[in-house]
Every structure is written in structure tokens, then in C-alpha cells.
Length: 249
Image 1 (cartoon, helix red, strand yellow):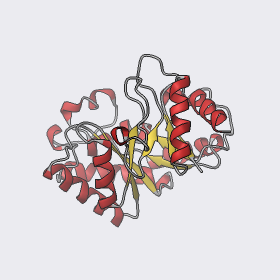
Image 2 (image 1 turned 90 degrees about the vertical axis):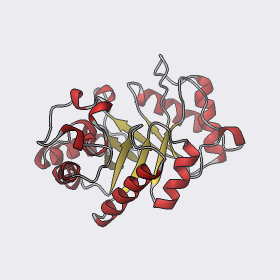
Image 3 (image 1 turned 60 degrees about the horizontal axis):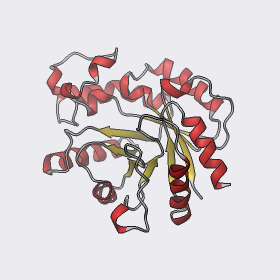
Image 4 (image 1 turned 30 degrees about the horizontal axis):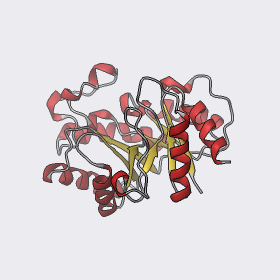
């Protein structure tokens, strides 16, 4: 049976009706940009739980751990830390990255997170260095008692990311649509996502609403892979979730 999740951010948080009992997972993008302090995170968790009473909450890892200066994220955020700017991000083995993790960990604890979402940029490549950094990060977080959902950008092909995720014992997540293209089809060798990948059911074309063809593709995918996890993001996450849920009924 398919499971459903929300990638919750400022674009879709307003106007959500409460409660939504059919949502299994909530991924919080706010923690990627500016993780709140522990007390504020606890209050925020209570708000999320009122809207999504049956969902597990999964915060994104702070961008100071994952993204470097050249990725351009730091100009869009408020909270920062002292240290050399180029020593942050890309899962580097630096004092700055270690401090960024330790500074954000109380937020994840306050949110009672069992799983965190790791978004990596193009600078964390499938090469030896990128794989080493990912492996070290996973081992460290496992020591912290945390599971990982990994959302790679850049050069990682979905099937490649899936196999490396299996090696690391983590869960990969990929966009099901890119510029309006159809979701990869597990029955078609040329359109395989790879085993166990979560799908971000979100159009990144000029229109954020999923088209009827895209909804049909998702339904067909779930019919082949009934344990699929669909994560709805973007400004029309609720509308797209409702449409796919109705199509699967």
C-alpha cells in the first residue's frame, strides 16, 4: 500500500486544513534553511502534529552541513555560525561542519525526529570523495540513532543513487518529474528509478499542478510498486495529493 508525504515549506504551509489524517510523512524544509532553536522547534512540532496527526516528522539537515558557499543557499537564510565560509557544507570533515551539525541537533531532538532528510548538491558527486563523505556522515548519524532519507542533486543518476543507498542502508528520494517529463516506469528498462526510491511527486515545470497524464503515471507506478512512497511538494502540494489520492481510490 502506497504511503503519502508532504514536503512542507512556506509555499504550501498556509491554508492547510486541519487535520489531514491520510498523510504518513512530513518533511520540513524550514530546517534546511534556518533550523529553529529547540524551544521554538518543539512549539512548531505541536503545530505540525495538529495538522498532520498521523504523520512522522522528518526535518531536513541544515544547509551549513550540506551546501557550500558556491551553492548560493546562505544568501537566502538568517541563521549562521562563525568560521571560514568555505569550510561549511559538502559534508566536509571540518570543525565548521561538525559545529553546524551539533548546533542543529537540538532542533531535531526537540522535533522527536527518528529520520532526517539529507539534501546534497552537485558538489557531492558520485566520485570517491563524495562517496566517502556520504559514508562517513551516515555512520556518524547512525551513531546518533538517526535514519536518513537522501535527496541527491547533480550527477547522481536515480538508479546509481538507489544502489549506493542500499550499500549505506539509507533511503533515496528522487524527483518523479523533471520539466514535465513522465515518472520513470519500473516496467521499462529505459525509465527505471531503482529499487526503494521515494518519489517527489512534484512538477518543476512552469505549472505546479500535476497534469492528468502525470497523475496517471503515478497511479501506474503505484500499481507496479504498491509500497511506493509519494512525497508531494510545491505550492499545490495539497491539490496534487488530493488528486492522486482520488485517482488511486
